[in-house]
Image (cartoon, rainbow, N blue to C red; front, side):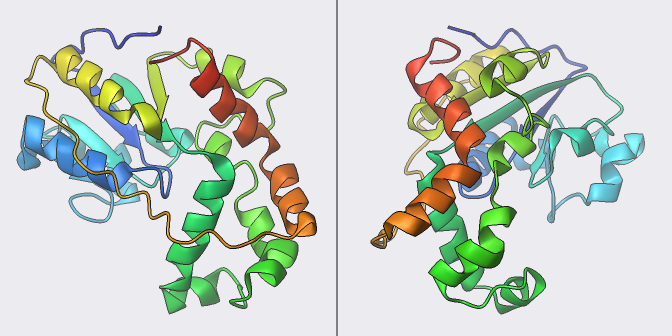
Length: 221
C-alpha cells in the first residue's frame, strides 16, 4: 500500500477536485482539521490566476478545487497532490445531473437536456477519460502506471476516502476525524440502452482502467 509520507512545514497539500468525487466533503473535512483560514479553495478564497501568485498562496496549507495537475504546477511551493476517483459511469451520470441544474452550464457546454442525445453528440466528449485528464494521463496506455510515475501523488477511490483522509491527517500531524457522509449525488440511475452504455464504456476506457487499478490493486488503501 502506498502510504502518505509526512508532509513538511513548507509543503502545500493540493487537492485536485474532480467533479462529483466527494470533493466537497473533503473540503469541509480539511477545513475542520487544519482550520478554514489555512484552506484556499478555487472560487472561494482563490482564483486560477492566484495559483502562480506566491504571496496569495503562501498563507494556505491546503489548496483545492476544480483544477488539473498542469494548472496546479503553477504553484511556487513544494506540493503533495491528493485526489479521489469514482466509478466512471456513475460519476458521468452524476455529473450530467449536476450540470442540468445550472442553465448557464447547459448553455455553455452546448447540451440539449436529453441524456441520450447529449451523450451521442457532446457530453460523451466532455467526460472522455476526464478523471485521467486531471492528472494529464488521458492518453497513457497504462493509466495506473502513469499515475504512479507522478511524484508525491496520493489518490484513492471514494470508497476509501476515509482511509485517505486518515493518512493525510497523520502526514500533517493533526488529529483525524470521521469524514462523515459523502455526498456522491447518486440519485436514480437511468436505464441505459446498450448503445449509450457502449458509448460511455468507450469514452471512459482509461478512467475505468485507472479506477479498477485503484480498487483492485495495491496502490492505495
